[in-house]
Image 1 (cartoon, rainbow, N blue to C red):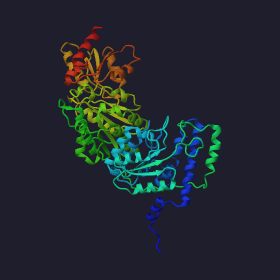
Image 2 (tube, rainbow, N blue to C red):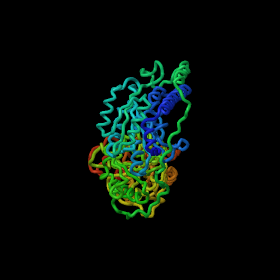
Image 3 (cartoon, one colour):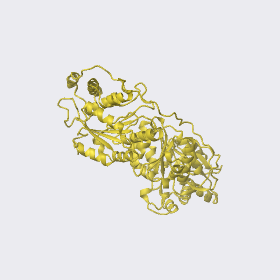
Image 4 (cartoon, rainbow, N blue to C red):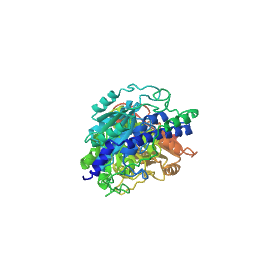
Length: 597
C-alpha cells in the first residue's frame, strides 16, 4: 500500500493530533502557567490569572498551529500573533485593550492582498475588551474584506478588571454577535487541547471569511482557591503560596518534550521601501492657486508611481481629502476604512509592521482626535506610519466648528518622536509627502481646505527641521512666524506694512516638530528680538507655545502669540480668520502695538 500524501497526513494530524501530542500540549500549557506565576512573583507585578485562562490556547497556537522560525521572530514569512488581551505586544503595542484586532486586520489585509503570501494572523482577545467599540469596527472591516487568513480568539473567562463582565459565560451571545458581523465562528471549551486543535484546523480550511474562536475559559485556571474567583485580577500569587501551587501544577506534567513549531512557507515577495525619490520636480507655478489638501492627494498618487508598496487608507472622506486621486491611479493599493477612524489607524499600523508597506492614512484632522489612543500606541510600537489631517482650523469655513481641527497640533506635538509637517503651498506639500515616506517613526501632515497661492519654485528644496525665511530685509523690525494658511496672511500683512515703511520678516516653519530653533532665534535677533506667531489653531499646545519654549532661554526675545481664542462659528474662511484674530489685519495691528511698546 502506498504511503499517504504527506500534506494530507500533516493536515489530519493538525486536525486531530494523537494522544501523545495532546499530552505534550497539555503539559506545555501547564509550563506556561508555571512561568507566569514565577515571573509575576519575581517582579511582584503581573497577571498570572489572565495568563492561566489562555494557557491551552497559547500552547496549541504556538506549538501546533502557527508556522514560524523560533530563532527569527521577525521573519516576514512567519505567522503573526497579536496579544490584544493584555497591555503588551508582539508586533504592535495594544495599550488599554480593544486595539489588537484592528492591527491584526492590517496584517491580514497586507498578507492577502499585497504580499499574497501564506502567512496567517492570530489575535488573542479578552472578553472584557469586547466592550470597546474599536473591536466591532475591526470585526466589520475583516468581514467586508473577506480576510480568511485572520483568526480572532475570544478568551471568555467571565471576569474583568474589577468584577464579573456583563455577559459572563454567555458564550452563545458572543457567537451570535460574531456571526452577525459575518464571521465564521466556533465555540470551544478553552481547556480542551484536542478541541482547540480541531477548531483551529477547521478555521484554516475556510475561504472568504475571517474566523472567530469563542473559547470558554476560567480565570486563574489550575490555581486552587483562585480559579474563577473575583478580585485576583493583576495580582501575583502570594510568595508563601507560590511554591505549593507550582508543585501542584508540576505534578500534572507527564512529558518533558519541547515541541518544535512548523517552519513557515517562504513565499512573501522581496520588497524595497527605502530611499524613495521624486521622479520629477513638482509641476506647479508660482502664483497658481491650489489647496494643500488637493496637492497632498496628487503627491500621494505620484509617490505611488515611485514605489509599489505605498498604500493609502481613508475614512470615507476621500473626495474631500483628495485621496481619491490615489485610488483612481492605484485602486489595488487603496483601503477604504469607512467612518471608523480608530480602526483605520490600527489597520494602518498593522499594514506597516515588519516594513511591508509605506502606509498613509487620511481623514479630516478633527476626526483623528478619536483615534489618539491608537496613535500613541503606534508611537510606542515605533512603527513607521504617516497620518494626514485635512480641514484644519477656522479656514475650514462653512462646515463649522465640529469639522475644524484646532487641537491637532497639540495632540501630535505630545507624541514622542512624531514629525509634524504643516506645508503652506503645493510645492512644500509634495515635498512633505515624499519626506514622510522616507522618515522613520510617525509623521503627521496637516493640510488645509482653502486654495492658496504657490509661493515656492519647483526647484526649492525642503528638509525636515528647516524653516524657510520667505521675506526679509536688513530693515526688518519684527519676525512673524506662521505655517499653512497663516503664512499667506503674514505675507499679505508684510506687503501692506511695507507701504507704511514698516519692514517685517516672515518665516514659514514647514515642520512644527522638529522646530528650527536656530533659524527662529537668529532671525528674531536680526529683527529686534520681536516675534509674532500666528496660527490657525488654539493657543494651547500650538505653534506659539512651541516657539515660546524654544526661545525661553533668550532674554532679549519677546514672543506675542496670535491664535484662535475660543470655539468658533461657521462662516467664510477669510471672515473667520479675521473674526478670530489670525488674519493679515490682526498681524498688522500686532506689529504696530509691539513697535509702539
